[in-house]
Image (cartoon, rainbow, N blue to C red; front, side, top):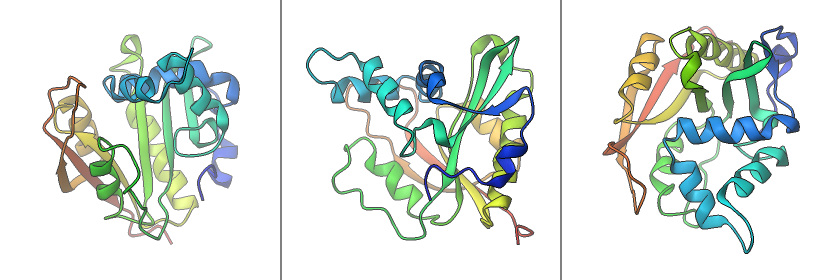
Length: 206
């Protein structure tokens, strides 16, 4: 199911469009912004000889497969440049195995396994100079349309309790807390203590 945004996304019009592999540099930046540096930290741990953390992020964005991929991404442009992005896709109906994933990611996989079959908002990010313009709310509406197109009964996402601005945005848009797990930080510096699973039901999705 990953990498399929559905028929509705084909009807997107400017300033929104589906991302392409050429958008990988901006996608990597926005994913790192949304994760408050966690993405770059993890990419650094995955980097091989002669690779930088950003090299790893670019490769993942360009692959076109998996959760962090251009095929799962809608971008919002402003002044002919990418200003914000949404990375989303349906979670598998069967629970995901997380015994071999990095320890830092295991709590998030646990939360995802609570809500199989929902439309998962993996990344919602806006460059600082474009915040406060409503782009996040607009992209959440697009996520809802994608969820309905995929006949999902609801949407889900995981956010740090330290990201108070994002929590307020999601709550204003109808998401409610469903479960939490402790954040494993290692050497990643962040104010949050828990990952929070938020869910929005779509009772009229079918």
